[in-house]
Amino acid sequence: MVNENELIRMEHISKYFGRVRALDDVTLAVNKSEIVGLLGDNGAGKSTLIKILSGALRSDSGDIYIDGRKANIRNTTDAIAYGIETIYQDSALVTQLSIARNIFMGREPIIGPGFLNRMDQAAMNDAARDLLKQVGITKNIPPATPISALSGGERQAVAIARALHFESELIVLDEPTNNLGVEETQGVLRFVRAARDSGHSCIFIAHNIYHVFQVVDRIVVLRGGKKVADDIDPKTTTIEAVEKIITGLVGVTPA
Amino acid sequence: MEPRTFLQRLLARPEFGPFVLLVGEIIVFTLMAPSFLSTGNISNLLAFTPELGMIALGMTMLMTSGEFDLSVGSVFGFAPIIMWTLYNTGATSLEVGFIAGMLMAVVVGFANGWFVTKLKIPSFLVTLGMLLVVRGTALYLTDGFPQGRWSADSPLMDIIVGDFYIGQLRIFTSLLWFIFFALILGYILTQTKFGNWIQAAGGNASAASARGVRVARTKVILFILTSVMAAFAGIVSSIRVSSANPNSGTGYELEVIAMVVIGGTALNGGRGTIIGTVLGVLILRLMRNGIVMVGVPGLAYNIFIGAIILAMMSLHSWLERRHHAGT
Ligand SMILES: Nc1ncnc2c1ncn2[C@@H]1O[C@H](COP(=O)(O)OP(=O)(O)OP(=O)(O)O)[C@@H](O)[C@H]1O
Ligand SMILES: [Mg+2]
Image (cartoon, rainbow over all chains, first blue to last red; front, side, top):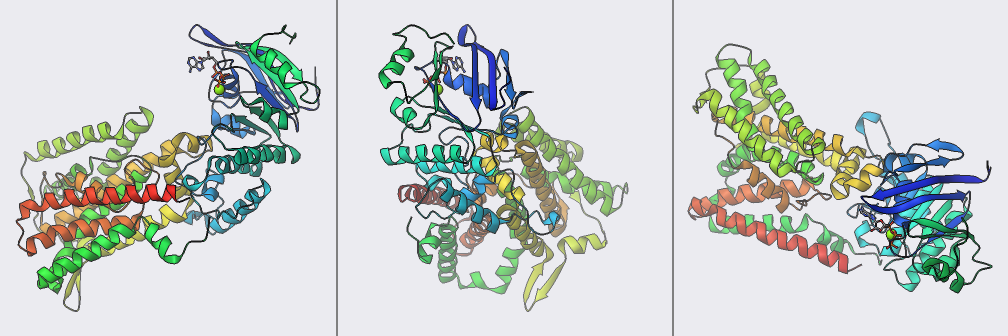
């Protein structure tokens, strides 16, 4: 079972909300530098699964292993410390603050004597400018721009830039392309590829299968809280076949 | 995002509206009552402005972090009661009395912060309760009577509220304290890591704490800061008017919050400006003074204050919306 290449393994995860069984014995592994697409219909349990991974929810049973060692993720701070960055639209940014201040939030570099507690704003702005280029933002956006002045896609880019800078090993994107236009969606997909190319792993959740097919290496499908497919290769499978698995119109592949 | 001109940037600043209002106010009052700019009146203004102003500076920091404090007026009244009662009864020296008054403020601020961050009770309710507790204690301990101030001569008095003359202008040291605090707090809010935490805590607390920002600790520190500023202002005021009244500071909490929001700090956090607060303090204090000088009945003061608040809030929200639409 020991797989050198494996980054994260969630094992036998179950989660109840009262009497609703949101997750039933789900096991999900992500390899290094791999983009995994997590698909499933509304209410299949995708968000619940990744919320457990990002510390926003706790599972009723099951374990999480990171680099083969058991991890104890009690809250979002723990998850970030383990190198797991979750990106939902907006929620992880402070819209009143600038791009640079958001990227370094909580870990602001200090310049000068410690007791003056002075932020190194020049260094923050320089790093932010480089990072925005790195995630493929070609427009010249000053790093002092507040998040509230950015489009949805650009906000995703800032969140991804932050994950890149602090070397998050796994970036989780829950429906990052919701409410985005064609151009912005292509942008987000480009950031995701850029992240993988620099050695990061991703879990990518989206309802638009076409988007998923464009970037992921492997597709996992949840249905009714159970994993029904684990190893779909988007290069050798058709979109129609995956749709059938999601809706349950074909036999369940043994997980 | 095309580069914007200097003028556009200036116009987009939250302090711009209050600045224009202040200049307009000075012009109108000077035209209507030329003695408005006399040295006597300016000295007079500069004597009492720093007192509310210091509370407003602390409140700006707290409100930027998304909380506010209604108990400042009662702390303003109670701190000098502690100091003068201890001194007048001969229990302690004035200096020890001063420290006791400030310690009371630390305890009140810590309690406010603890209830808000640990028990997750909204700051409106916590500090409303604290307002009644502190005011009630002050009234109970003094039987409602002002503490007359007998003679005290301590270097502390000169440090806190000495005065000196620049030409014919009589300046109280409290003005220097106000400027000093404005510079320090302005630096903290805009230049430091702690300042970034304040804004992050007020803007999106859950996102901030996920990134390692100590949101609860930040807020507790700011509750203490606000309370301590109010206590210091109350002691300054009691020395200036030579009496400590258990009822003094009544209603200050709302006037201070009005000063802060007029200056451009957001009531629900995330955005704060010390420069704006200094302008807001001047706007309301000049208004109170100027209205009387031009012959409007003092009782009409609140009508003007209310109108200014509504006008400024409309301006800030319009700027905010235009800012978002324009990008
Ligand atoms: N906080 C909650 N309390 C109660 N039930 C919940 C809660 N969160 C999720 N559920 C239930 O758990 C199930 C899985 O929800 P989840 O949000 O994980 O689905 P999803 O796959 O992300 O769906 P979508 O594609 O619509 O986002 C659903 O039946 C949902 O109603
Ligand atoms: Mg979901």
